Image (cartoon, rainbow, N blue to C red):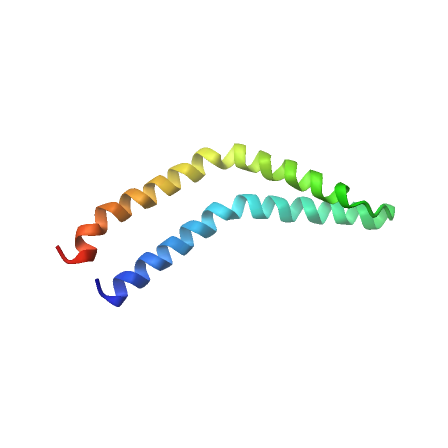
Length: 90
């Protein structure tokens, strides 16, 4: 296994991790921004008011994008297992 193969697998793994994390993180970011905007306008500073909507939105994002996330992860894992003989030089 040479350095280029290791770097290629590492880059692909990082891209898959970013793709899988993006729906939940972007949803939490948008909901957090909206809630903080509402908090600053109404001057209500309650910790649970910012946490609960983000947790609910993240759960909804997981439910909505879960099937796609699993299929991307299975596809990456299948491709990685298929590349094992070439990676070890066999």
